[in-house]
Image (cartoon, rainbow, N blue to C red):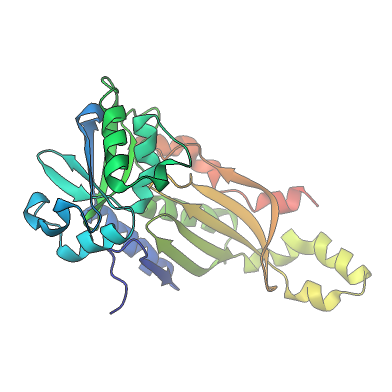
Length: 282
């Protein structure tokens, strides 16, 4: 059976920008964001030996037995809120620790029952803190800070549409190469075919002078965009030299510090400018 979206190991590839934007737009519609008090969260063990493993009635009506079994094989925790429970995806682990204000390499080694008890004791101390939970594909995928100064939402499809508009403006003739998404990260690569001579002229001349004209002919300027709404990474754009076996990063990465609400997005309209670094660093 192919890997299903509820599984922690799920991933998918795209070879059309329209398909990738549509995927994330539909994902955004089906996702649920909930603001709750941190002290009101309860963590329960969800390994194969826990009572919850065979008690489907303890979970939200949208949760399947398959999602519970997959969680037991992975993070092995469930989170209770609003009178029901949801399995916790492995992407939620770090942000859950952040809300509990704890960390350390020993925690993952604990039995799930002990880990859940430790988390509950620490979560209960955060009397004034709030959390922003992302519920997606039958699981809680992130437990962000509920303070908008720390985390605000900008759907990935909107980020990609903004990137495409900026590329069309600055680099006409750009070509979407491929995209990838899993529960932790989404990324995509564009070729800037129309600007090869402009962006790579110095590289090509240097390589040709060293007798490597054939290598220079293979190089294509491009960018990689990556982002995550589960707290794994900010929105980042990096300039690349493509066409060889492995991409070569050029210059620094341009990134936002936060995921911004749509109203705040215009403030960061120029984050999508990484390819200019290739030209500036000749």
